[in-house]
Image 1 (spheres, helix red, strand yellow):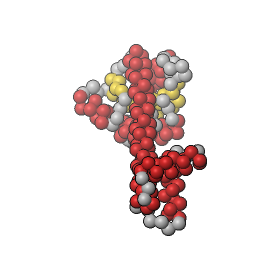
Image 2 (cartoon, helix red, strand yellow):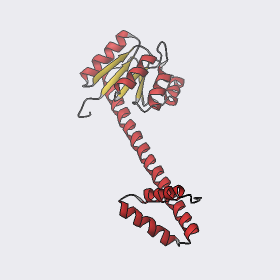
Image 3 (cartoon, helix red, strand yellow):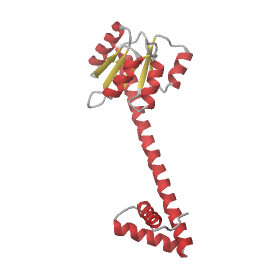
Image 4 (cartoon, helix red, strand yellow):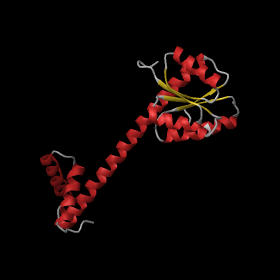
Length: 199
C-alpha cells in the first residue's frame, strides 16, 4: 500500500452498504474524504475533493454511476472503481465503456477492496504518465516543424543554405539562451513586424 493513505470518495446510495464500505476502507488504512448518495453529488465532490480513487455504485438516483464515472475520468480527476450487484457481461461492458478502472461485485468483503483500489490507482498513474509523454512528443514535433519552416523561409528569402539557416537559428538560441524553436518563432515574429512575407 502507498506510504500516504490513498484518499477515497465513496458514492453509494444505500446507506448500510456505504457505511460498510467506509468502515472497511478505514480498517484497510484508507482515508475516506467524502461520501455521495447520488451520481450528481459524486461528480461535484470528486471535482471539489480531488480524491485518489472513487468507489462508485452503478445504479444511483439523480444520475447513474456510469455517466458520473465517465465525466470524472474524462476530466482526469480520479480513477473510478464501479461497485454493483450485477455481474452480467453487459454491466461489465458498460463499466468498461465508461472508462472504469476496476469492478467490485456485491456482496464483497474487505479482501476484495485493497487489490482493486491499488491496481486502479497504479493504472491511473500509468495513464497520466503516458499522456504526459505523448504531450511531450507532440510538443517536440511542433517545435521541430517551427524550426524546419523557419529554416525553409530563411533559405528562400535570403538565399541561405540549410546549414547557414540552421547556424543562424542556433546562434540566436545560444545568444538568447532559448530553445531553437523559440529562436525560430522570434525570427518569424520579427519578420512579420517588419512586414516581411513569411510563408
